[in-house]
Length: 130
Image (tube, rainbow, N blue to C red; front, side, top):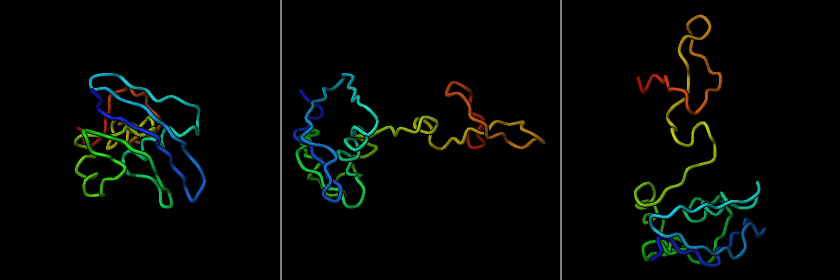
């Protein structure tokens, strides 16, 4: 059984090839990693599958998710899936897993919050989570 089956995914932006005939399968309950050098198309692959490509981009191929081709779905259908059935974690390491958190630390100079970077393991002191 396949959770996601991608076949011949290609992406162009204003006619410039970005991805060329990428194919892979993801099985339910299994770990899947997409690995490559910077600029190799990992993010564009995810954005193409989610229907979030930049203006001027064109995608071809197929991406079957629960029997539906994501590449042929209307925006309304993709909106119903995004965040409910499918999602992606963006690359920015400080905000990827906790976007509303701005990682301010209390007790900076003169009592003002400090904006210096914190480790992902540091406890969050955001006002919204207090």
